[in-house]
Image (cartoon, rainbow, N blue to C red):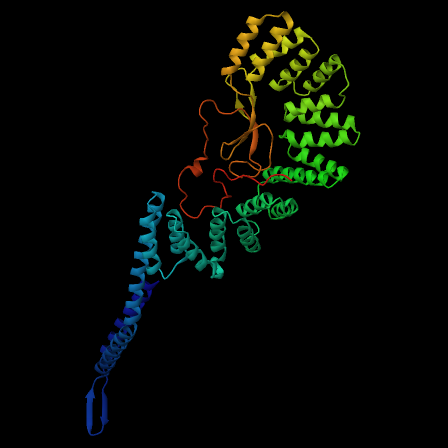
Length: 474
């Protein structure tokens, strides 16, 4: 477009020059005693020259007026480039674990970028890595004072409070942050954990309801967490003397957390106490399909504690039929058969348990467990009195791997036969799973995303130092 306009201007100029050349004419100007006598073409050329000179002078004046602004802009751009380079160096240093260098780079970037939020955030993270809690808190407080970075400041201060073990302070800050971003998943997790650690299960239920409305948590995880919360509310209802409400809550908890035996056991015990033996049996049978557990088998026999051994063995057969491939089914039937002196039945199911790959919670046992070896020793001793074979199995039990227990998928700790909502080692909520302990030295498999140092402000973690234990049940 500009080329076309230039071409038109040149054409017009050439046409004008040709016109004045063909029609020269005369112009006479008299002014203040001065007389100018020239042709029209020369006059037009002189006027054009004067106009050009005046235009150049105007452009020069405008350029001089704009020069200070341009200098300031160039200087600001140079400072911004230098600050961004310092910011990049700081992030790289933080990723390399060089917190002191990252903090120096953050200070330089903050000075060059006039306290940009990212520079303050980098400085806070670097200070926290070096244990300078006061400096980190100061940087987060500065972020807290700006409307556009208030949530960042709250997130950092929540992390500081959690690491310091200040659950009350962290909870207050998290409630304030939830008003700004109710859809933040890590915030729902933090509020849920803090409520669980305080034993405030009603508040935990409200947190999950809000998370469901805002879709802050994955649906499956929210469902499982809600099952745990309802299980704890059921325990509270039972302690307060309301077994019927406790049973209703426990029934929902069993459905929502179908992979755990504890809610099902609690539900069945409540039903037995209410005189609903058939409903208790159905609850245990339903749970056995997804979470076969020794506690469920023992509770199944408690429904009719006066039943003779043969009837109890038949009851175990009925229960095992709901999950016939599970190793726990074979062991439960074998124990009941031993008590009823059904030696062939016991040997058959123990052999199946030995041959079957013993798995629980996605983990596999490297061989017959101690419990299985002891059952084999008991069978050899009671069936035929073969003490040599019994001793062999007992010797084998000494080096056999332990059976499954509750282990924390977050820290690898726990290792307890009793399920709890909070890990006794790291304080994590809803992290215990029924599985075989790892063979050899205890090995914790970390999520690759958390194996390295987080680059910038990870989501605040729960108080997770070793030795942090959940509050005891009343």
